[in-house]
Length: 171
Image (tube, rainbow, N blue to C red):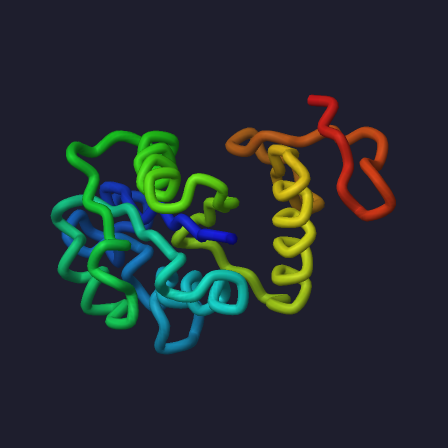
């Protein structure tokens, strides 16, 4: 069974003055719709993981705002970080909760502030990644870069695994 984890943290300084510590960018509607970036992420994941299998990990100061934006999210699926760390720690916290609830679950982590325009393709790619994870593979999803960017890592992929579009990562 697939569970979606959405780390929704940050100090709110990257998009200043719109984003502030008390109202970071993931809580803002920045894409021309009424949905915040977080709400859009949850909606995008809806066909893959309903609210009872979606966990949000956020800072103590954002719990009330996240709960207000996501009224269908069960209270037990809104996790407040005991102290601010990084995405890896937030994902680890959610993984521990999911493992306790459902030891054989497949989990995917999705940033709270990404813009995805092609929802059908996104859903298809994530379904393929879930299938790979169900076979025991650790999956990562990448996209073709449009220009070099030192702030991101790159994935060099190798040979296909099986008969689908899943490929080994070389580095």
